[in-house]
Length: 415
Ligand SMILES: [Zn+2]
Image (cartoon, rainbow, N blue to C red; front, side):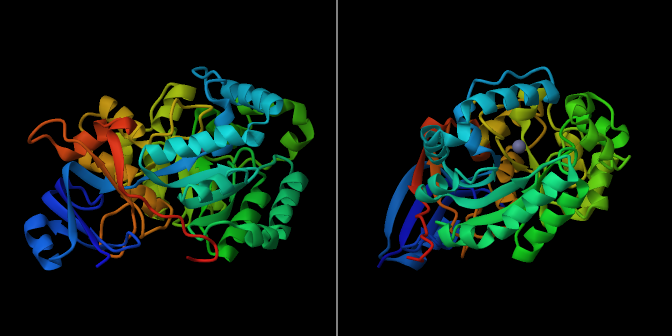
């Protein structure tokens, strides 16, 4: 008998109501066989070893937006002055330090993710330097291989490089649990022809891409009128800047016009999106990822969460990189929202950090405790008898969480 059962004070499925005095049964590979009230589930699995857990069991977390290759820049890039000054500092520091070569920092970041109870990530990468570390740690999710370039020729050349490298990437790919997904960086740093081309490539591969969208006012000004701090920053690239066909509309409508707004492109940030734009995003079915603490760090503003929810969007959450955040704990993102928007239910915040992240990455096997899924199970204590278990998870610190069932790595050979 290789099944195992866990009997907890509460089981939080992620996409369904909390189950008080709940039980979960998993098979040898961690696939959920049954979940429900302990009184109903456990008698059906007589003979299975039951572990009694004082506290709450919830699915492995999903951090839907990271840039782990920047982990060596932790604490080295100042924020608070807006996106363009932050980007300038990032580019300078990144040029000097080459964080993608800092394997130790990447390994430490991945270890931090796992220790916090993270099962999957949506990791944006220019170098693919993070893929090995993610695979070794058994993390699942997507690696978004990024394309940018204001100048058409350079950006299209980058897409062609990715396309030519596909076989080599596939041959060396270390995990069946990680998806390789070519992706455009943003609409204001990537020539629209390259946005179309890289999305066509992702669609040919049958994978979801990712796009930073409506992150800040500088993006809006640039796309609408080729003005603002992004235009100033790009002034040294006068030729490319002059030739860049600005869409003369808002970021969301610009994305829509390029075929970049839909169910297979993650819309990351939307911190600067307005209600009419959020309505278009919701209508399109685009998966949304919010990065509250990164937005606070860079722009000193939060995503318009009440408006997002009102539009019917339950976003995934991401920490963004350690160049704009203090940790990689996706529940700290939920906590940042709980602190400022106390009306948002803890259950919704937990859904954002688990099921919504898995949904955004297109993974029904992750982020939810449901039969057939393999989410990994994490436990934490309840603050007090009768406390809201969802709030307890949102308030928990990584050090107070523990893996009950780790997701085991799947090798590319398939073990
Ligand atoms: Zn990002």
